[in-house]
Amino acid sequence: MRSIFTLAGLLIVMVVVLILATRQTRQDLDAVKSVTFATQNDAGARPFDDLAASRLAQRLRDLAGQPQLPLDELREAAARAAAWAAGLAPGTADYHTAVNLRGAADELLAASESLTDPHRVKARRLLDQAEAVPGSPGGAPPGPIGGIRDKIQDLQQTHQEQFQETEREQR
Image (cartoon, rainbow, N blue to C red; front, side, top):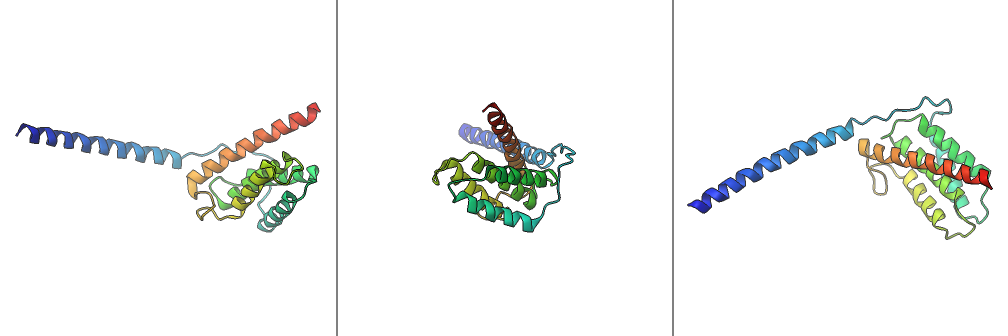
């Protein structure tokens, strides 16, 4: 009889713990969904252009296979994609595309002449992600979680570009 009461008490405690954990998980998910990023009113923001983005992706893919890279063209490509991202809201397919195009251009800027350079490999992977629809295999998760992931990637790219610029100025 005592073991039955112990088992019943244990089950009640487990149910209470599960209910509290579920409630906390729901609150955490709601908090993630409600995250908004402070967007800078950047005068350099430009409207996203699907056709231009597609052409840019193809051009970057072509450049990834060439040993000599046009650095000025890659800097311009990264700046164009950054301007697109600045004018978009995180969590959208266009923002996802712009961030990945910017990342691919930055990776190619950091690449050596070797066609098997890890930066070139990463650039190709980012181009694949840029062309994949969010939510599809290979694409980012759609919605707020994908938007957060893309925003973090965009912030990392900004930092990488600033680092590369500082390195270039010191040479």
